[in-house]
Image 1 (cartoon, rainbow, N blue to C red):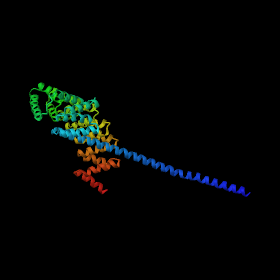
Image 2: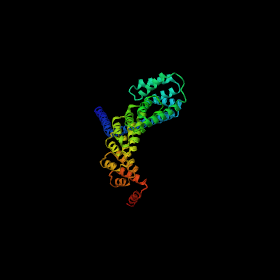
Image 3: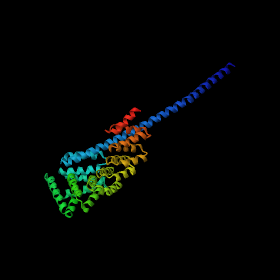
Image 4: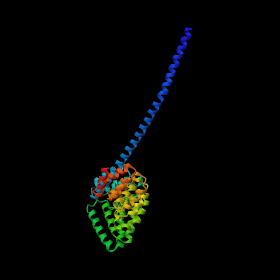
Length: 373
């Protein structure tokens, strides 16, 4: 009997222990789920932070590449070809969006230094890696010039000779544009220095003949390299005014290059084309470009267009861009209206912040009203 009791006691102990173990797991389960949820949230936050860090690093790389590109172009303009070669070589190694342009300018600098074989190798790399690049045509023109050269050392007087030729061309464009235009096109399509090409384009832009304007429009639409295209867009806006609005609109709609689109948006500022800026502000799918168009409306005084946009807009970043446009354009009444009626507290706060920076009696009176509430 004692053995039976002992057996029962042992069984009860095991059952109790098992129940406690099961109960412990059941009690621990909610805590475990909570921990898993917290860990998952931490993982999401870490992933978001990592993505943000990646984007910032990528943007820093792009900014660095743009700075290097500008430095390289400055070095070319000042005939510092050895420095230019080093800068563009660094850009090629970075393998960013300007690699094809960097390869061309590297070859150009090498040729100016008398490194013909190295320059030809750089052009070959450009054609191999970027067969569809808009810089390929310039590379081929430079290659033809090098292969047809006698092999002598670079002539230091060549720069001044080019300047004299441009002065002669400018005079000929004024007196006989039909003869000068083909020569000018040859300069723009050839292997001249960036400074000379820019001057040639300026000479072309100043001529109001239909033939000259047609050549300008071709370059602005992308017939030449992107550097000249951006410059042509700028000159179209300066010398063509609103007459060039249709051409600029076609260029904006046809290009996928954000830098060309920004050049067009800047051109609208130069020509004061509020209508075209408003059209971009309403329809552009890229938030950055759209917000830039909105801010530019403030520069050209498009307050009515901005007010119309604000009443229909639902995106907060776009509304913030409109407030920036109000501020740039000195639209105190528009900012006060937002501060009084906007339901979004962040936007109201931004409107008040901008009013506090404006030297306006109307703004100061409204800020005093806020303090007296």
